Length: 156
Image 1 (cartoon, helix red, strand yellow):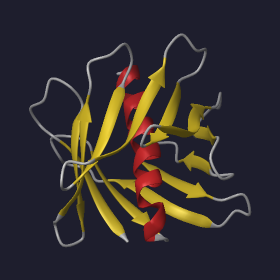
Image 2: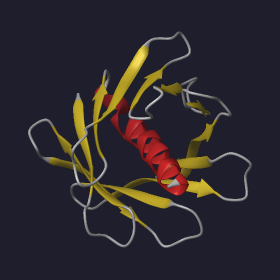
Image 3: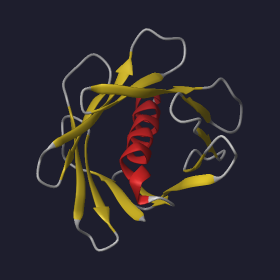
Image 4: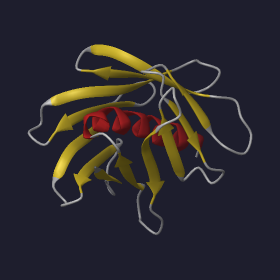
């Protein structure tokens, strides 16, 4: 399954539209006014599915991930040089990026690839392609991609 993740051009708060390979809107992400990033994910019928919320006052960036009202895990940036890595407290998942911080892979505890995230260049806003092996993982892959993008935005 492929998803196209596009940040909206004119928005005061973080907002994104997520499309499938047929350009149908699958998810809409709306930023909420808060201390730190708070991103709520909605389906195409405007039903809230989950949230990614930044924890503030931590040594390294950390985000809590919620499906509905239930916390299902977190993602924390690891202290590394050259290649970014993130520790995910969710099903044994792990994320590693390349030195450009444009491309990432999500693997399970056995090292199997679950998703590949690639940044598309030459767009006015952040645009990523999420290539997801199991469509049932799409929402979770999206949540972790949002956290990575928010962490990168905080540094700029």
